[in-house]
Amino acid sequence: MTRITKAIDAAYTTIALASTADNHGRFAAQSPWDPLQMRVLQEDYDFDTIPGLKAAVVGDIDTPVATLSHMSEGELQQTPFFQNWAKPQGLREACITKFVHTSDRIGLMGCTTRASRAIISAEDQRFLALLSPHLRRSSLIGDLLDQARVTTNLYRQALDHLAVPVVLTGANGAILHANGAAEQMFSVQGPILSRNGQLQAQNPVAARALLEAIAGAASEDAALGSRGIGLPISAPGQPPAVAYVLPLSEGTARAAFRPACAAVFVSTTTASSPLPEAVLTALFDLTPAEARVLLQIGSGVSASKSALSLGIGENTLKTHLNRIFAKTHTKRQADLVKLVSDIGTPLAAS
Image (cartoon, rainbow, N blue to C red; front, side, top):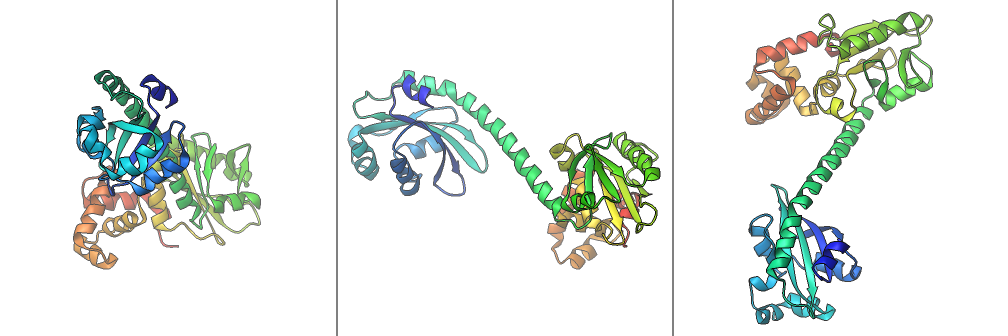
């Protein structure tokens, strides 16, 4: 930011993200300038009161807009913005470039000059136009990283709210995420354990079978299928416990906890069996509402009856269904019925 400011002999440079839901900017970065005045700029002036801003927002992307190319200097000096904010700081005009324009926000870079400087030249504008695509690329990369972090945190929170222990593992049983209930089970040494970062059953007889089932889920073993497998894992003298190992579909969990490829749900007499919605949410990246719709439709209930039972409109149900079809790679109700049937035991009522 400082180098851009020096390159065009500006007073300061800002990069701002403006929400399309309102007219106020959200400043992301700036070169050194009076922080109090920048706060005043953000809080007291908006889309309609900053000269040249509207022209930049409605104009073409990568096309710098200099204030004095849209109004005379006399007109600029008569504006409240200039009189109350720019003039007292010895500022003259700005050149604003739109580098991002999506459905929910607009990315703007602005360079503001001192009163002692000449007006923004065509050469200055060409320089800023060349920078714009690089800013857009950086912004999109940042978006992807931020989105991944947000998605991971949301998914982590969702799993932690489940009462049943859930562990996401790699093909060799490496623990990539364990929810709070699973961590609690680890702490009391059973019936599942974490040893050197690998999921193991306390029962030595079941330990190998558990790892083989996880490897089968990772390789999409046809024998394992989407049904997964339920393994008795309790050690002698312990309450009955079953680990349900299911393949993790491509979706949020695999993306957020890569290289996660298996989900292990643990059911005991003291830790209830996983709720069907929880299983579907983890396996197919469904929202709770989508999971409830899938259970209804996957049970063979008609769309109209499902909507009535769930207390939602048929249009809402259709919207959920379209998302379910996309996430589960299915096309019709019969496919969903088979899907629910194939998953089997973890979806059965306890």
